[in-house]
Length: 338
Ligand code: FAD
Ligand code: NAP
Image (cartoon, rainbow, N blue to C red; front, side, top):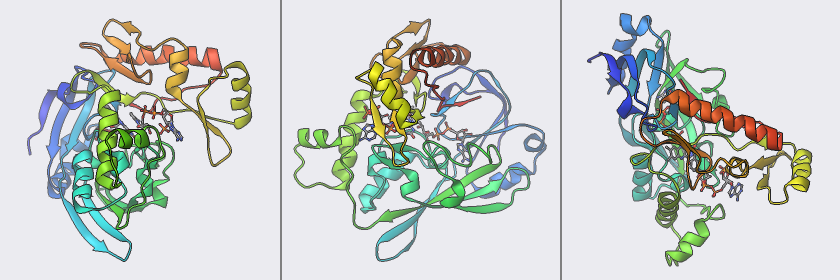
């Protein structure tokens, strides 16, 4: 295994921030990872596990060891009357896994088509889109403790999944390296088309017989038409989470802003569309040097070319302040800041 010094991270983050890691390596097997854990470089440096770098903003060079996770493998490990259970290596590309499920008629992840990144990062923030989150299909994951290399299986409950949250983003931050994930996928699909524009897109596509493939195709079409492609313009998807507020506060805001976009939650609170708040605070399409707010998607901050990570971060701070001043609502960053 090669360990590179002062290695550029430009091609390893979808924001295209030009920065470097003090040390960088890539692991392709558990044995290589265990060997790495015994090395001085590993023991004496801060660690950053990296997948596709699509949920990260580097605000400076990383003064430690970046390990790109390329642990591969997709296998059916068991089945029962209702489910197929598959174990997927943490380094597999998420969307390739989704397409593999569709080809095998394993249902449950079709709404999560075209999300960038790798499988190992998917539990980190309980990735979600179009009314589905990975907690809905998650069985367990295997991880190695960063310090002592011991193996631990985490069940769904132990991951403490929440809205774009998990125990790995909070209590156990930087403590475990996720090596594989087991998903529990339905043999008979429950189609979920009521969210966002899926139904409308299926109509446009002329779909008569709904299938997981048709839903995946619809999601791919919507996402490709709405979201900036990181290959073309640097971004990390939604920069902020949709804020959750008490329903009484939501009702009061609606008196002041009758067009406020909100959704009732099962716990009695309300979820506000952060994109709408940012747009109303007049940030949509604003550009400062090469840092900006996307012209069509106010929730997505972009690097037009050579923006520094701290320029994007400063812009995000100004947005937080102005949304707070206008609506009294605090936006929380979804993207991991380093
Ligand atoms: P990275 O950015 O590489 O890492 C993210 C975090 O996870 C870091 O803290 C990293 O240290 C940690 N990590 C990564 N791998 C491991 C591991 N094996 N073990 C331990 N820690 C690890 N997200 C959604 O939820 N829904 C969406 O619909 C969505 N759409 C997006 C659209 C676009 C255009 C973009 C650019 C991003 C979008 N995202 C979305 C955000 C992002 O794609 C997801 O969060 C994705 O899961 C990140 O995967 P990654 O491999 O790129 O993670
Ligand atoms: P959209 O469909 O235009 O909807 C705007 C917002 O309203 C979304 O944030 C969504 O919340 C919420 N929403 C829409 N329909 C809803 C419903 N029926 N019930 C409850 N909430 C509803 O959103 P979009 O920007 O095109 O994104 C589509 C999906 O992809 C969303 O689920 C979004 O989260 C996901 N996405 C995520 C990222 C990321 O980086 N995290 C990037 C792009 C897209 P939710 O966000 O809570 O679903």
